Amino acid sequence: MNPTPTVQPLANPVLRIPPAPPAVAAAHFRASLAFHADVSDVATALDAARATGGDPGFVVLDSRSTAAWEQGHVPDAVHLPTARPAEEARRLLDPSVPVVTYCWGPGCNGATRAALVLAELGYRVKEMLGGFEYWVREGFGYETAEGPARRPADPLTAPETAPEEAADCGC
Image (cartoon, rainbow, N blue to C red; front, side):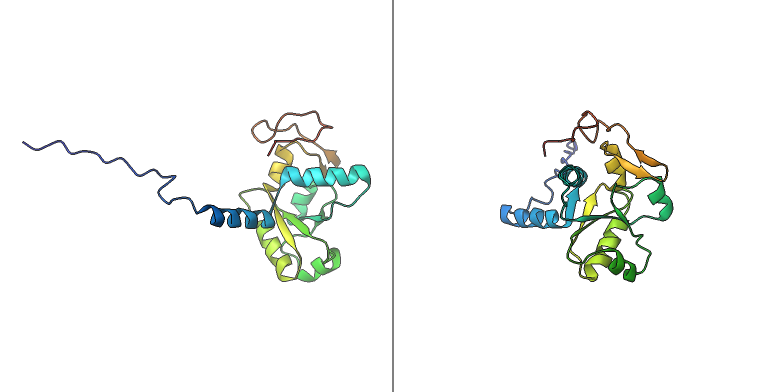
């Protein structure tokens, strides 16, 4: 009589490759924060600067096409599509001011390409995680060819708040 074969459970996919040692993980996550900025952090810094008449300490750069820019963009952003020559970056951006790039959203790497071009030109640069999609989904105001606009925050991406309140996810 043949014994019934035992089915081996699949290895835990989360731990198939074990987590990095804490010091290695800390270095990785610290480095990640040097390269990325969260949409709500960018909005909070820009709002605080507007409220005080101050400077946020960085410039936001929209790397999308003109048609996309006109459809909607972060207020006070600089428009510089990735396809434009590097010389235009030198004309529009102060090399002493950090730049935060964005494109459509997490499914687009235009902000990454723009950040690479700017870094190669000597700019200090970060990408805004989530891009314009998450800017809008989190309920932040934006500019269009027709003027200012705002959509309610998507409760799956941001806490519900009154339009004049800053969304604080508690992160």
